[in-house]
Image (tube, rainbow, N blue to C red; front, side, top):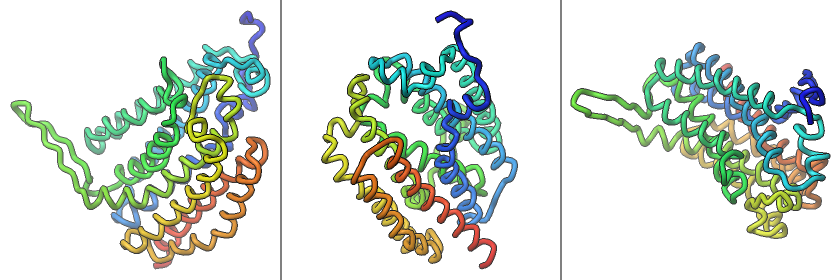
Length: 321
């Protein structure tokens, strides 16, 4: 294909390239982290909040577009290229897409450096680890997404990691503090109680994010095998993977309940349990039929429902308590 044959990246194509509707799933842990910082630690730094919002959004854009390019390069199945991969069926120039995506990553990293100066050096290592996963999730000789590690990485990084950083940059007293002194002395101060608190309230988002990835991999199992992409459902087998699936959202709700018991979340957070009938309905629909075009969105809807409810409950508590 020559340069003249490549299509231009119009706005509709760009929105499809970055999977815009799915960006809402990444918004939930971000908004929760901001709201929780005010609820639990009594502080919001609006400059840090705005900076991280832009940085996280740029990372999300990078991940979507970058993954499309890597999947295009590593694809083995011609039908997948013709019907599923946007780089191929939209006739996009993969180099131009990469340049665009790395520009988003550069913006995110630049903002990240600013946040490091505004908080603490430890954020450089935390953010660096997240960027490492974002890049090598689909890149490298053995991409992480082609191993049974996707769910174990996407959840902690995109779910808990986002909640943690969104809270961390707003906290008056940082739970992890790294400092350097003369004569090569390094001090690392860790508040385990606060870390445990953030871990517990962030786990529901980590689990729900992993659930979305798990559902996605179940739907794509046949296609992934053709493209030599061996995810967790491949090793479990589709039947067992579907049987395990309903335990994921249930576990997320369990950790919300535990967080309330530990007084890490307000008692109002138990209202999330009222969503149980809809969560069961969505879960049952996916278990009956696993299809990317029809039932996969049920996993996304569960995350959006629970995430939005958590955010709204925290905000309502702050406004009316």
